Amino acid sequence: MTARRIKLPLFVGAGLAVALLLAFLVSPHASSQPDGLNKVAVDHGFADQQKPQALGDGPLAGYGVKGVDDNRLSTGLAGIIGVTATFALGLGFFALVRRTRRTQASPPTTAGTPT
Amino acid sequence: MHIPDGFINTGVSVGAGVVAVGALSVCVRKTAEVMEERQAPMAGLVAAFIFAVQMLNFPVASGTSGHLLGGVLAAVLVGPWAGAVCVSVVLLVQALLFADGGLSALGLNIVNMALVTAFGGYAVYVVLRRVAPKTRTGVMVASGGAACVGVVLASLAFTVEYALGGQGGASIGTVATAMIGTHVLIGIGEGFITALTIGAVLAVRPDLVWGATDLVPQLELRTPA
Image (cartoon, rainbow over all chains, first blue to last red; front, side, top):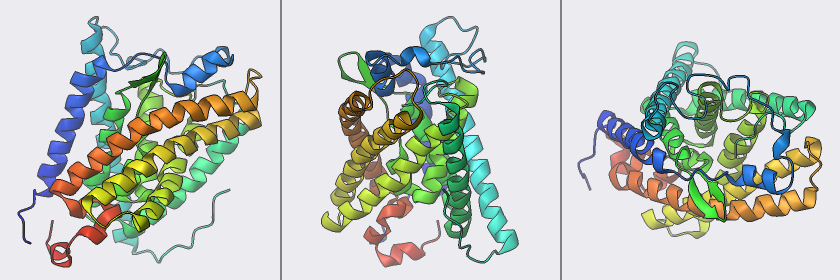
């Protein structure tokens, strides 16, 4: 079984394309009903405990791009920015983590359990 | 399931923050030990994909929606250590850029949606893999089932946090019943999305599924990526 395999960069590129398409094209059509936790909070009287988030006035707050009036486009663009930012942060972070191992050749850690 | 600021008191929020930082630092150390070259871009992709799918709220019941949490999906694809980090990256981006999930609640959200799902849910996956057939379908069923349970575990974690420091005075019994009931339904959606995604990756690059390396013939393992 030596089936030809898709090369990794192609796989990651294709996966990223799927993520970007979902975020741009599908997310504007997602349900805008409250999610499970928010619904429970409304039904059981603790939704009003919510305090404004300190970054709630940011240019992307609430998955929209400030200044873009078309709701679908605004949500879609926010999705593209989010996918790109998450990929960049994830890739950078994991590349950094891998690098620490290569440079230190650290012995296996017997890490303490978090409490 | 992103907890906003204000639902849970400061003490419990800070406590969860300490747990999150401690657990994630262990996750990062473990990831550094076991991560292979090809897994860094894969982990980045997993985080980006989870971000995208978390935007896709699907309706579950009257006036309620749910979305993927992704902890089990990430854990099956890149292992629970890196998987918990992937979901935490998503939660960080959501809180900082999109104001989704409270800043004071970031620790709570990491505990519920990254740690409980990636470790609790993955433990369920390991058990299900023992009874499921060692086939692609078996892996899909086990990951879907574990993903569903993972969401319910996350809703239980919220309930515990609400019992410890919840604001607004709702009774724990009703919160527990409502949270679990709703999240069983959301979990079914999570299970389908997880199973289908794992199935798709298994179809093209089974060697990239951390939790199913036993399916890959030995010879293929030596092929450089």
